[in-house]
Amino acid sequence: MNLPIIINMLVFVALLILLAKAGSNNWSLSKKVLVALAVGVFFGLALNIIYGTNNPTVKESIKWFNIVGNGYVQLLQMVIMPLVFASILSAVARLHKASSLGKISFLTIGTLLFTTAISALIGIVIANLFGLSATGLIQGTQETARLSAIETNYIDKVADMSVPQIILSFIPKNPFADLTGANPTSIISVVIFATFLGIAALQMLKDDRERGERALVAIDTMQSWAMKLVRLVMRLTPYGVMALMTKVVASSNIQDITQLGNFVVASYIALGLMFVVHGGLLALIGINPLKFFKKAGPVLTFAFTSRSSAASIPMNVETQTRRLGVPESIASFSASFGATIGQNGCAGIYPAMLAVMVAPTVGIDPFDPLWIATLIGIVTISSAGVAGVGGGATFAALIVLPAMGLPVTLVALLISVEPLIDMGRTALNVNGAMAAGTITSQLMGQTDKKIFEQNENVVLSKS
Image (tube, rainbow, N blue to C red; front, side, top):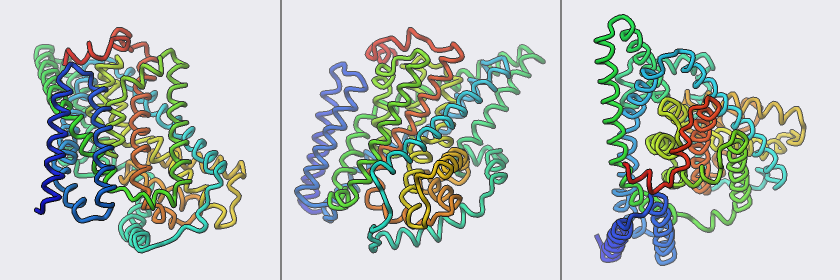
């Protein structure tokens, strides 16, 4: 380890200590996370300016920063399956009515797919307004390698997955393997397994009340235990965000971003408009969108820096239940399904924009109303199928483009700006899941308005 790396490490540790001391002054989680985000941006920018993007010193320093950043993400991934299992099991066991379970599932998934259709339309409109096109994009060494990897590792998998196979893959055959996250559909499989266990607990309560009540007490204890674990890990959020943001900024290639700046700007405008749509839908049902976004801030910041919808599930559930007033039964379903189905950013806006960019290169008019309607339909349907193969935005594009008769080469040509745009897409995915839970809760009349209206500091003090 040379001297510059040691200096970088010392500065990084000093910033973590300063962040810890500053955050001890009764700051809200939102404030801590925003400060951590700003510190990470400035430190990462300083490293980028001093050393340059591909400098070995920066790469080696980032490996050490990853102990905090990636370590935090892995801790959240550690609690995903226990949380999903315990929360869904507890939620179903408390419902007492199977009709409520069906209603929650229908409204949650319906909202996710409906907003995905809107996001696809926004992606199409923005791509057309900006005149985005795949023509003239350069295929360099990185892009060629990416295309080769896509052809080898992804396209065959997507081609082999039919709709019946995707649906069948949701049904758990080995729940213990799914609890380890062994399959791309493990989260949905765990949800289904926990749902059946919850229904079985309700049946036991009817047949043998004494044993049934003991089972319900055990389920509640397990769920409370899982939530305590989540809150323990969440205390580390500001430090994880700072490390992740430092890595992103320090390793960003400004030249590549500038060359594809038009696509980056158009993508973020589309993402921003979809956030406005979420806010409009919330306002339509009587939820204050500004208060919603303020309380969702820490989760969205983490999703933005980590680029992981799945890793955001624990914070998503915690935010919905303790800050937005959504019952655990609804929050658990929306967070779990929202991480795999109907992702507005990865499975909605992104493949729609790529399709518009590629269409003119094969003689298709991207302004044709019938073509646009077909694209929206395919994007919406495939957004439920993406969970069957895993891989987020890449798989969404690889399902949509061939279905529309379009080549997939463009997916590889955007590799240089992919991480930057993926940050915004992931934040939108998570926001869509939270919005779906809040909308479902409000429509079913189950939102706790006292919690929603509470000051965030008050809510956090109860953790």
